[in-house]
Image (cartoon, rainbow, N blue to C red):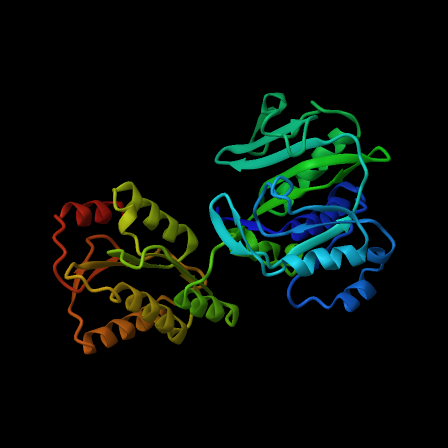
Length: 388
């Protein structure tokens, strides 16, 4: 499972759409998203409720404690919302030690309310943890002793511990959670409007690896970067390449001076390789996280070039290790991908980079040593080889 956070706007969009489909509950959720490219005239034409209702506006940037940080404005008209957004859009802020600009806002109706409830569903290895409290809101951490939690094993039905409209709502949210492959949902708070549950603030995470079966259900969905995270030029290049192909190409630069680099096919295999290197005590030496599936030879060549360029960009006289491997790939032409990798390696040889190859004594896994001078004992090779 690869848990990816999504914006509040998308969390509520998915909840509204699929709660109606799965549980026949019609939530009166209205929301609008604002970015640098938003034309407010066009937005008002499309979302006519913005002109007739009092509003709430807040950043939609994957960070919490927005209310405590003074970033939530309540009970405004649209003119005041526009003024609030324009003053803060692009402004750099600091949240829990992380700095970054505000690039996205969400606008919603202002909902007067009295009661605030808390709900969270979190996917774990053997099931789901479901937490509920009648004391939700910005003071939830101070009232955590009032949160009730249960663990629901995989494939077990949700019991009727909480009855009435709230209980039905929790069951409906859980059905959406399962059907859309959410890995985390949190509503803090949700309230009751005319006796009906209504989420005021919501967080969501999806299992990105389930995207292949949820493309239609998720719709036009963005997985934004964490707040404050800026792509390196190499990451941007692979991200753009990934956007233009039906293949899957992912590259995250972890440590530009790392000495262990990976080029692994498949999300599951890449996680196993990465976790194993970490378990063996070399996590700080990992230069990157990479996974790929279904690329052509030319696409693989471009990905391999980026990885090799990064691996050799900071020569310090110490050896680098490149792990090339994977598992059975249903959608990948292994011959084409390895042709791309070999071409990239040959380019490095032509560039006077010394390469030693060590075939693993296990099927379909190879280790390439780049540069020279790495004084590691053989235990790392043996341990990794034995695992693979």
